[in-house]
Image (cartoon, rainbow, N blue to C red; front, side, top):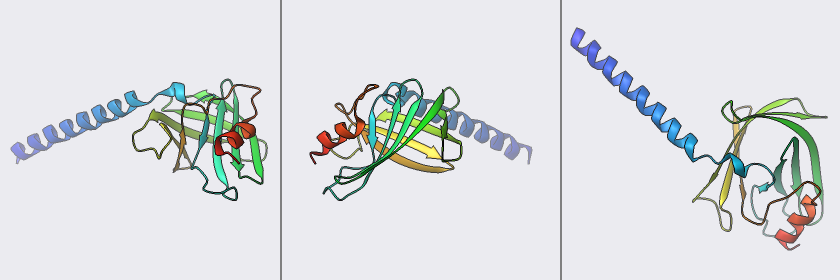
Length: 155
């Protein structure tokens, strides 16, 4: 009986070490520099009627939630506090929404749909959504985010 307990303890230790190593490897693949000053969208619309969801984190503190089609656009302006040292956490405050803790993970990804190269996984309230970006979707404070999207979508 003691032999089995010893083997189980060894297996549990190896499993824990394996999971820890796996988490560390995944974390090292994350590229935090990709998050800010970039437009992130959930898809490329196939027509001007399709509403696209987007996210923009401007370096410093502003966070935009965007919905845009060829005919309308909606923007929520929020502020965020960067807590990414805490497993990618951002604290977000919007005037009309409840304060939220958002967890982000950005990386270069091979499985992004063409023409995208980067992925953003954003988790709020245990729900994860994926957004995509690419070179050319960078923005700076003062840029027109909606104008940049109109140019990109060629509406």
